[in-house]
Image (cartoon, rainbow, N blue to C red; front, side, top):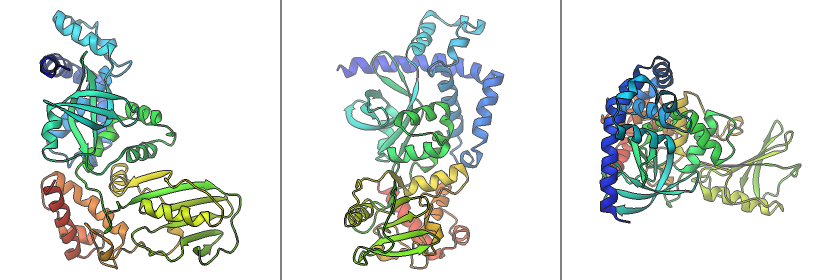
Length: 411
């Protein structure tokens, strides 16, 4: 691959993009009454998120939205290509537009497979598993600040490789499983990776809002295990009325049985299974992958074999961001609330982020999400109001905030 020659081609494509899309097509598209109303309606729904974005972010996202509507598969550009206003374009400009129709633009959640140098990257789309070469000076600049593990771009093909349009968005904590979870919260008919792509194509704006959690870090227990939500569900016709004490600690409430692996410390796994005797549903829940494994191993002693890998994995960051964006509570462990036990976390259990015994994991999670708008604006959080809002001690919350800022500063 001749990167020097390819870079010259990409730079000319960038010039054509500015001339045709930014300078001519965007003002024209923004004036189209129906398209403009549609865009404003989509973004107004998430004003509680965009209000905390940097001033330049919203216009960039809106331009990205319009470009996607124009150049996506069966996009609006076909309808407008023969419009009288577009006839003033040069032959080169029209050829550029027609080439975009031949290669529709699409949003891609991707990971970097390899840095090829000179602002070129080999990417892999996490939902199609297809690899592609991306030219992106913006990615190079972003990597100097944060080692993002997942990226979200609107990409178009220039005849040789792909280039992105709009903000360069990466995530420190989010995973492909997180994006699948988020898509499923937007609509209840997501079962496959292709379904996720369909939802993104139809509703890109909610996924754009995930940028608000871009810099939120992942959480690790003292032994290095990532703290997350792990969940599996099975249909089991029957379970014993009484469980062996050497296998499970059990309690029952109104036909719902809660089972915890015997002899295991609660933190950091918080592993628990719930069996609904009426519905015949068994749910395995834990806050680490090893916790899920402990449950699977315990059920093997009852001659029940389950996969060690959970059906659903959601990062703490994504759970909080989903609630923030959608403005509603999202219960990943639905049976947990029927039992009185709190997920109390002692500071001995944490490596990076710790709280006192009387502070719940849920309170801390919500407080950390509340910190995000301040971080995005480059401001130090209002510790007093946040501590009062989330029922936390000011001193402890300040310590967590300082740890987060220090961690971000070291990346």
